[in-house]
Amino acid sequence: MAGAELSGVLKAVEKHYNSARTIQVLFQQSYTPQRGPRRVESGTLFLLKPGRMRWEYQSPAGKLFLADGKNVYLYIPEANRVEKTNLRESEDLRAPLAFLLGKLDFSRDFRQFTLSLQGPDVRVIAEPKSDRFPYTKVEFLVTAGHRIRYLQIVGQDNSLMEFTFEQERVNLPLPASLFQFRMPPGAEVVEASGGDQQGY
Image 1 (tube, rainbow, N blue to C red):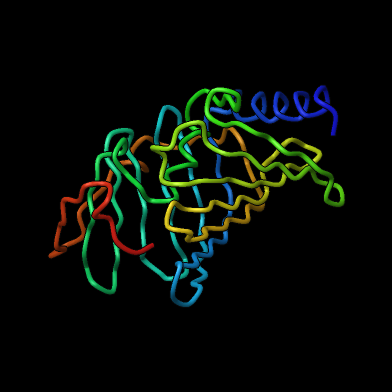
Image 2: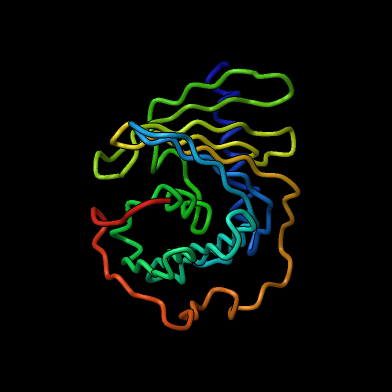
């Protein structure tokens, strides 16, 4: 695609997400470690600006990943364990979606864009500008309505995280309490640095 077309697509996606105060969308997530089996999970994602997200899993039931703007909490129900990490230090591959929570600016955060048509969608591949990010490449599909319906993230360890998004709803009233973490009874709390975070 020509440079003008590339710029137009990216600007349209930026406008779509920068004008949204809240987003609610169904997701399917798959995680493939460098070595080991692929895992597929699903649920509902809620985003609230500034800087808050809630990944509420239906499969596996009870799992929760929550960012309250300061910290990230990952609750693993089968272990009744909570992993707590500072959001800025988090290396969880869900964290890149935090770019949707601020002012989305592709040219600030990414480099070496490649765009191509994939059916009715536009396929975008980009690399982060900073080597400090926990991922080396992102790929996403943009719909005609300028929504991101698929996102693939390649980790520094060559792990692969993929998300498919459906039924996006924008600017629904979402209460702030939805993004306040409530400690499950009897749960073990692990304070982790970014590099200490465990499974997905």
